[in-house]
Length: 142
Image (cartoon, rainbow, N blue to C red; front, side):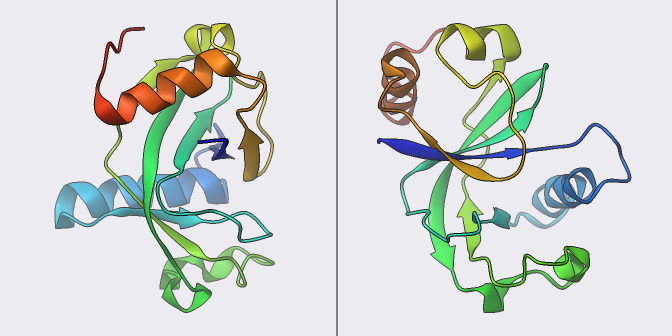
C-alpha cells in the first residue's frame, strides 16, 4: 500500500465528525453493521487501502477499506455535512488496531490531521511496513 485515508475526529462532541463517529460506533455495536465514512473530496480511495480515524494528540484507530460505494449510499444523517454530498462512501472493516499517539509519531505518522485526506506512505517505511504486516498479523507489536 502506498497511501491511506486519514480523517480527524474533533474532540468537540457537537462537531459533525464526532457526532458521525459516535453514530458509526452505535450502528456497529447495536446492529452488526459495518463502519462507513466519506471518501476524500477527490474520491480516490480503493478497496484494500487503510483508513485511520485520527484523534489528534491521542491515538489513531486503523481500519481497512472493504468497499467503495457511490454517493447514493450516503447515510440520511449525513445530510447536514454541507459540501460533502458528492463523496463516495467507504465501507470499513472493524477496527484492526488502535495506535497510541506517540507510537504513531514514532512510526512516521503525521503529527496533525485536518480534514479527510490521502496520506502517502512512500516516505514512511516503518509505518507502511507495520500496516502491511497488520493485514497478515505478522510480528505485530507496538
